[in-house]
Length: 251
Image (cartoon, rainbow, N blue to C red; front, side):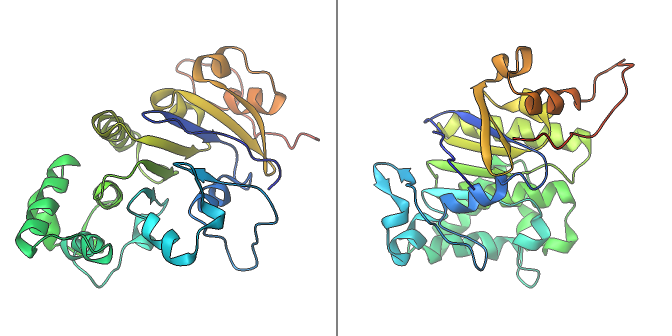
């Protein structure tokens, strides 16, 4: 990763777009001070509400995760505990962050979250494997917004879902974002999803951001050849041109 520089504003959806291996997910993990084994921060700063996250101790960072900054991971089955019922997993968020609520109040809050993400209350009694992919993704969204975070990170949240469910999930995200005035970092490789959700776009390649602009500017007048190639890969109704892979442009 080299020279990454972007800002996610309050009440904004910023898309971070790039092909597989471009560094999108590592960037997201960095915002939570989570790096894979062997990864280190050599320099730079990550500011959140005036504080440099990289200078916070582990206790303060843990308090930040899930409460002020939340993340919805790409694969729900990997992110959910297979041995716990969904209701228990959501309830655990409140106890883990020492939120002063009674069991009854937590139960009511869980029901409110199910209503917000358009899931039936009985979902709380289910195990992850008993739910569809779309339902599991809604559960992750409910968990991510449980404590009303200021920043929500979405890492390819609809990649494994069919097109109809994708639309429902993206509409849900937009509805929640508007209601809660959250800043959202939306990570994807698919410009057609960007067109549905984002307001500004950062295009990433090989660990660098090569272009940043409004969605309209990016789609109508992309400057970088890599951005143009990504946009050309978008499916178009009635298009007759050949589909092709994004080439590996030299720097």
